[in-house]
Length: 228
Image (tube, rainbow, N blue to C red; front, side, top):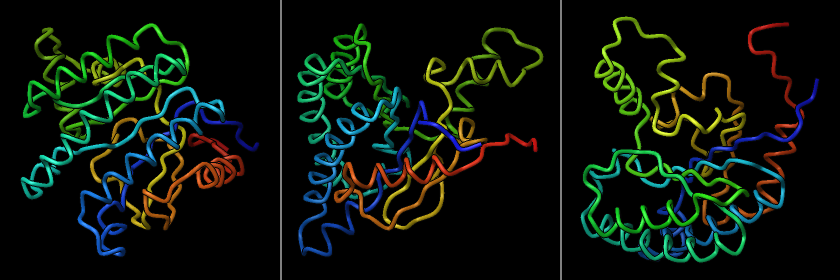
């Protein structure tokens, strides 16, 4: 049976650097263009009727990048969160953040907390920002939380309930841009039965039409979950 609309889409937003390089621009210009693609995609997802959208914004491995690029990314993140907080109130978005708070500056944490708290009662699209996120680290976080609770035996349900955002359902569809075809430590636990859609389009060029292509491809899939 063909699928209907996924409730939750997760996106690995890849290709900002290559987009900038192809235009002989600094990498940060690619990240700024990528922030514009985030805004377009959030709007398109809400219009399409998607309930949850997880965006892989900054991985735990991204700290190995040059410091000036990290500083630029964090400054861009703060500005984007300010804009998002204002837009979210008008358009009924809710923001969640998945990832470790370690290494994030007090300014970034303040912006995150303000955005999360001010949108907590909104009932439209939930945007889950994977920030300083690593899937293996998330699973370790869940196991350590369970050990701290005194658990002697751990079930799959226990781990699911102790992930960063247990209220967010597993993604039915994971999209990766830029032609790469790997998960890169993203939602390893949650992706057990996700459908994958890979596109050569670089993230800054991703738009409503590209999202529709992914949704159309998903609609043609048959999800058996190991059955017949």
